[in-house]
Length: 100
Picture 1: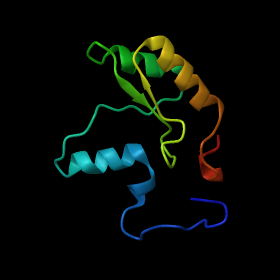
Picture 2: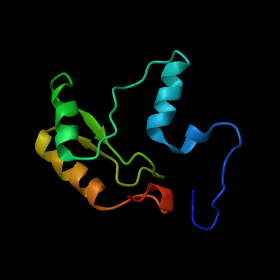
Picture 3: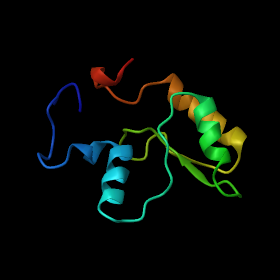
Picture 4: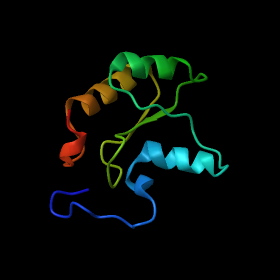
């Protein structure tokens, strides 16, 4: 949602703007999806990433966003840490309900 259009929706699926919910909807429909995690700290991200098979190839992105902004491919834990910390430091949505 955007501050200027607070109720924008396609009226069918609320998950369409939330990457985690969209992946869960795809999995519920029987489609294959990538492993994913919604994290609130580097420690949570590190635990998820170290459980993935080697070599590490993890797409790090905000849960909500547009146009691939702030999306990156991490091939090491140090790259992932840099990306995750950048995402955690700056909110990606103007939706005030998502701000702690």
